Length: 172
Image (cartoon, rainbow, N blue to C red; front, side, top):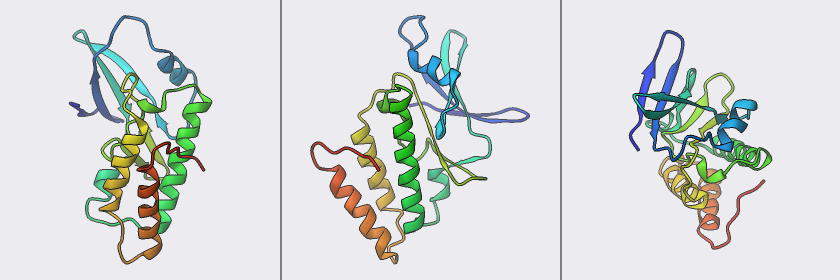
């Protein structure tokens, strides 16, 4: 996926180009425009030079990839992260959104610097299996865990073992 970062006078944006089929606006975009959904970064669909671009306002947010580039994740951070993630997934069900359109990649998971809560980009039509995305995310986090923190290691390895099983579902 080819992404670009743009900045204007007041905001920073992550821009993702998207292939659109048809002129009709997807149900999920209408749902996201009509509601502020905690934890989901709303895409702003713009058509520039006959290309569909989704703009995500990432002002005052830092990507997970940047945050944990040189630091490790402890148990408290892990638990908070996965509780936030569960809440966001619950929101997708509540607002009739496709959970497979969440971008569970450390480059597209942002932490709000003021609140510490995570925010995830929602890309209409992405439709990539959430279980595979979650497994990849957990594998990424396994390499970032503070290995001196036994609770953190046990937590992430148990999550990894659970997500590798058939019929895995993630809930609180």
